[in-house]
Picture 1 (tube, rainbow, N blue to C red):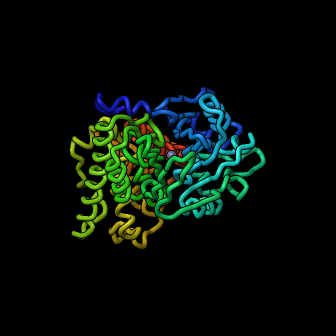
Picture 2 (picture 1 turned 90 degrees about the vertical axis):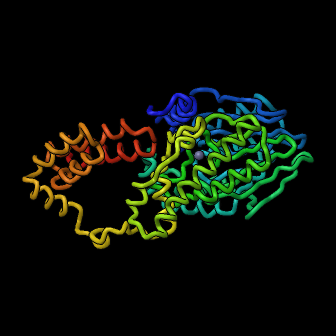
Picture 3 (picture 1 turned 135 degrees about the vertical axis):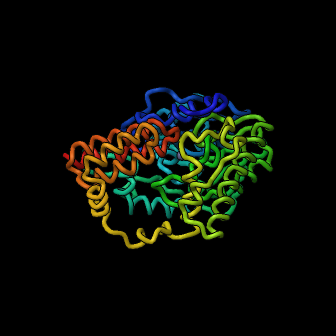
Length: 425
Ligand SMILES: [Zn+2]
C-alpha cells in the first residue's frame, strides 16, 4: 500500500473490510459472515456495530430500538445476534441511510424473527430500488455477481427488497421513547442519502457520508456522485459539533475536535477538486487537460483519515465533468469514432505489426505502465486471438492493478484482465 505512515491505520481498516470473501455477503442470505460483529458502545445506550464490510448504528430508547442501516444480506443473522447481545427491546424503527445493498439487505433476519419496525428512508430510495430491478443484469456484471443456482440474479424482483414504510424529502424529526432523532437528506455517493442526528447523545449516524477514508465520489462504473453536496453535508454535520460519528464503513470516528478536523477537511478536499474542475470547464479546457492538471495539496492527500484507498481524486474530477457536461471528451475523433478494433489494426500495421506493438509495450512497461497500457490495448484489440498480445495485455493490466493504491482502479483493471483472458478462449 502506497500510503504514508499516518494513513496506514485508516487504509488497513478499509482494505480489511473490502476483501473479496466479504463481498459475497452483499448478495446472498446464504453467505453468513464467519466472524461475530465488532460492537462498540459509543455513548450511553448507543452502539457502533460492524458485522462485516459495513457498519450499523444502534440507539436504545425506552420505547424500543432505532437502528440505522441493516448490513448486507449475509450479515442479517449475526447482526441480529449482536443487537440482542446488548438489548432485548423491540426494533421500533430502522432507517436506511441509502438504498445500497450493503446497507439495507440484512433486515430480513429481523423480520423473520418477528420484528415489525417502521422502515424509514429518503423518498429516492424507493426509486432506486425500482432502478436496481430494471438494471439487475448490469449491476451483476459491475459487481462481479454470478446468478444463483436457480439462474436468478440478486434484487431482480420486488419481493427481494424490504421496502421503506415511510419516506421523507428534506428533513424528518422522529420521536422515539420521548427522544428526538433528526433525519437530514444529503447527497454524496448517492442522491438518496440520510444522516441521523441524535442531539441528546451528540452522536451522528452518517452512512456513507463519512467512512474514514477518501469519499467514494468518483466511482468509474456507477451512476452520478455528488461531491459538492457531500461537502455541504460534512459541513452541516461539523456545525452540530458531534462527539461521535458512526461511519458507514471503516473505523468509528470519535472526538469533538478530531471530528471538526475530519469533517471540515473532507469538505475542503472535495471543494478543491470541484473548483478546479469547474474552472477548467469554464475556461473551455479539454476534459483530459482538466484531469491532468489536478493537483492535491499535501494537507488533503496525507490526511490520516482520508487515504484514497477506495476511490481517488482523478475519478471525482471526471465525475464532476460528467455532471456538468456531456459524455464527449472533446477529441473530435471520439465524437463519431471508427470501431476500436479497426483503429487498433491500423496502428498495429503502422507500427510494423502486432509483434512490434507488443515489444514496445513490454519495453515501456519498465518505465511508464500507463503508456504501455495503451500500446498493449491496441495490440490486443488488433487481434484478440493473438497469444503474445493477450499475454502482454494481461501482464500489464495486472502490474498496473498492483501499482494502484485505490480499490476502484484495481477492480477496473482486474475486470479488464479477466475480460482479456476470456476473449481468446
Ligand atoms: Zn456502503
